Each structure stands twice: as C-alpha cells, then as structure tokens.
Amino acid sequence: MPEIAYVNGRFCPLAKAVVSVEDRGYQFADGVYEVVATYDGCPYALEPHLVRLQGNLKVLHLPLDIREYGLRAKLMEGIERSGFGETLVYIQVTRGVAPRHHEFPAVPIAPTVVMTFKELRRLPQDLYDRGVEVISTEDLRWKRCDIKSIALLPNILAKQAAAQVGAFEALLVDAEKRVTEGASTTAFCVQAGQLCTAPIGPHILPSITRGILLALARELGIPIDEKFCTLEQFKGANEVFLAGTTTEAMPVVQIDGAVIGEGTPGPITRQIRAAFLESLDST
Image (cartoon, rainbow, N blue to C red):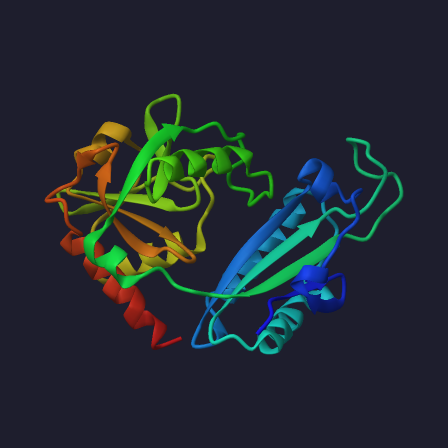
C-alpha cells in the first residue's frame, strides 16, 4: 500500500505531495506539528494531541481553528485511505505562503495544512527486554521548548550524535547540568522508589505520553516528584526510561557508558510499561 499525504484539502500519493518554496514553514520553520500513532487502527490519545496543536497555533498567532477546519475528520479519512494495519500520522501546520519577510504577512494568508500517513512499524520487543544505551549532549534549544515547533535543528544534531555512536537517544543537559529531556523523548529516572522527571515549563515539551505514564504511575501508587535531576543523578539512578509516541516506555541501561542500576530494565519501568500496554485494551 503506497504512503499518502494530505495537502490543503487534497489527498495524494506521498511522492506527489508538494508545497511552495515560499511557504514560511520551509523558509522560517514558522509552524508546529504533531505525531499520532494508531493502536488496532485507532489513533491513540488523539484529543490531547489536537488540544496541544490548537494551543501551539494560538501561541504562534497562527489563525486556524482545527475543529472548524475539520482536521479530525480529515485525519480519520487519511487513516482509512492508507489502509495500513497501523499508521503513523504526521500533522504540520505552517503560517502559509508569502513573500519572504521575517514579520507576519500584512495581508491575511491561508495556513498550509499537511498530513502524511505512513505504515507504523513498532520498535522490536527485544529493545524493551534488554534496554537501550543513550548518550548525553548539551541542550542547545531555544527558550520555548514547550511549543512543538518544526524548528528542530538542535534536536537533529543531538540525534545524529547519538546515531554516530550507535546510541538509541541523546539526553539533553542544560547549563546547570540538569537533564531536561531526550532529543525526541521525555526522560524519567527512579531514585529510591520515587519516579522523577523534569517539571512542565518552557524547558520541555509537555509530552502526551509523559502525561499518560505519570497518570498510570499514580494509579499504581508509585511516588512521583516532578523536579529536575542532574546528569550525575540520572547516571546514579536505580532506573532510567524514556517515553514518546512511538517509544512508549523504553528502559535505559547505560548513559555515556555508565551502567544504570543492575544494567537491566528495572521493576518500576517494567511495571509502568505493562500498565501502559494494559491501558490500550480499554481505549
């Protein structure tokens, strides 16, 4: 089944999808995005993703009411048209096409709305069974990481640094030596039975999966502290794991070569992942 795209009201084969070279997303990264995965063919946590998207559009003063536009219905249509068993949906909205000037166009323009629909192949189970290795790198991002902006160059550089040494992910470390998050994931650590992760704020993306896993941890009675931990605290933690739309809850067993805990996925990580998988049956 070929991958498909949606561009400004029209579905087409992905290879034939185009936008103008003067789109402000292309020239300025003036836009935001979301990534949605399906389970059993249904988009998971779609409402929180759409709420976050609408909120980010508002922050960017980008005039699009996604409910009035009918984005949900178009997304569902795209999943049906794609015909994949499981689908990964990428949604991107930019300010639109206008002559290249830094300020917003003086005359209102239509935003560019793009979605792509690709077959979702989940990460192999053996990664969850044995855990992954990650590296750390300097957090070079801007001061509004809570906006899911398409300007991802610092994240790309961090991911590439990880890829070059065969690591699964790069943990981003700020000027105060604190771990903020992963290049494309939320980072958690477990210290003396307490689950820790950076607090919500402009320094991290308020990940949908982060919120879901924290809610599950509370249901399990696991103590939670939303606070910053240093890189050294992560390396000395009993457990570390990552979270994301396609990552789910991924155990980390090494950071920069330092072994985490016993070097195997820890009990709280496994408990939270099991709760996540079980929760899928009730959605």
